[in-house]
Structure formats: C-alpha cells, structure tokens
Length: 388
Image (cartoon, rainbow, N blue to C red; front, side):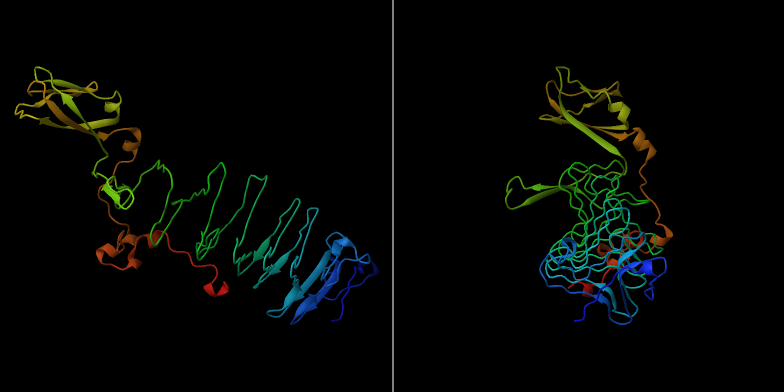
C-alpha cells in the first residue's frame, strides 16, 4: 500500500486544492468515490516515532489558529472522508486542550461521525472546557449509539448545573430524548440522593403505556392532585395462604368527596351515650349522615338525640349497658376540595367523541382508545433492521 504524508505548507503559499484559503491542514484527503485518507500501522513503538503518535494509522498536526490536523471529504454515497480502524485501541482519536473541538463531524444527509468497537468505546469525546462530543444533522440522528451488551449512548456531567439535554422542536412532536431497547429498560434514571427521573410537561408530566402495567412502583406514591382511575383497591398476600395466593378488595366509591368515621359506644344506665370526635372534624367536613345499630338486644327507641356540634353528637333511647355501633359520614369542605369540586358527569370533547377509556371492554378495537389521541405512540427512531 502506498504511504501518504502531509505537512502544513501554508507558509510557502501551498494551496491544497479544495481547501479554503483561511484554513491550513496537516493532512488533506479528498475522495470522489472511496476513502479520503486510509492509514494503517502495525509497527510497535520505536525511537524514530514520537510517543504521541506511536502506532497511529493517520496522524495530523496543525498548530496554526483555525487549522485542521486531519481533514477528509467524500462526495459520493458510501464514500468515507476519514476512516479509522483499530483492533484493540482507538480508531480515530480527537483531543482538544483549549477551547476548540476534539473531533467534528458534519453531514447533510448521512452520518457526521461514526464509531464502531467490538469491546470498548465506539466514539469517545473528551474536552477540558468545551463539548466532549457534538453532533449536528439535518435529516438523520445527530448522534447514534448502538451497543450489543452495554449502553448505546451515555451522558455524564460532573460539576455542571445541567446534566444532559434532549430538545425536540419538530412540528411532528418528535421526542426530545428517545430510549429504545428490546429486552432492557428503554430509559433508566438513577440518582443517589435526588430524583431518579424528573418529568415536567405543559399538560402531562409522564405518559406511560404498557402491555401489562403502565407503571410499577416499589414504595409509597404521593399524588398532591387528583387521582382518576377505572378501579382500584388493595392487593396483599392472602392472610390464610400467604405463600400461594393473593387477596384483593375494591375501594369504596362515591359521587361526593366523602369521609367515613365509625366506632362502638357503650350506653349508660339511662341508655344514652355521647360520641366525641376529633377537634378538626367540623373544619374538614359538612353534610353529616348518621347510622346506629344496637348489638345484643333490640332497641326500637334508639335514636340520635343531638346532632353533631362542637365535635360531638349524642345517642339515646337504648337499653342500659348495651353496645351500639355508630357511623358518621361527612363531605369534604377543606380549601383544596372546594377549589377542585368533583365533576360527576361531563361531555367528551369533540376530538374524544367515538373514543373510549376502555374500548375493548365495550367491544371496540384497541385503536379506539382515547389515550391514542392525547398521547400517541412515538415512532421508532431506527428500524429494527438497523440493529444486528
């Protein structure tokens, strides 16, 4: 294979063909169909070669401001401007110690910078002050990371107020950050002391959809706003067969924001009792309802002798020393409840007409799910054929 060497001849007025006059080049390669520059080296380190480029396929240096160490350009489809291949080390390495760019890749339609590695890093960017890796593309992905056994793309910030950013400004509602995987987690967030994943949206913070579960939380969940659901309840290990079975109960539903309170009272010798409630009871509730039931003996005259006032109500008309089960319900009147009244019946919006919260239970197709209007499924960034 013929060898190629290049040096900066700008001081002698040398113009390397396609180069812009204000840019000087350590090595220039231009290709109309194939590779601009291909360099191969299998020699071990020697005294004849400086340590900084021992074993380098192509090495270019330019000390002038605005100069380029290595430049590659390809005008035809599948042509390669600069190609670096390494069995164990780095295919193409770029480093900037000042405020410049280690490696810059630009493409109008194809890939700006492409790196492939069998066991280590496909593309690595390291910058003391500026950007480690920057990708810009008009049509395709700016930066694409593919890994068979590890992380496709990893971003880390050590001391900045901003960890990593993904921005989507397209009219077709393209995602700012897209995570795609066949078997693992699409997007994984971890924080030692803060929040693992923080989401904020103009209308919806997080929209999740799953074939089995849309969300799976291990630990407590806090919802300061309204929780709206098709159903709900608790599910625990069955108290009589904890190893092999579950036990489920449903929530108690109501068209009002209703609170339930109950207890057991022991009537005195006159068949009377006064029930004391917490001092916040009347501040929280209004529209009270009462239920009382005698235990052990009939009490046809049992009744509420005085309604709830000053945190208490009274029972009378029962037999001496009998037990009475009582229940009181109230409707919430706190500030949040008054500001967010429950809308029991409401019309669907024009765009929601003909769509359903639970289409398949109503004999409709899954495509009639109302969530498909508000949170359409984003298309994959890469077709499945692109992942080997």
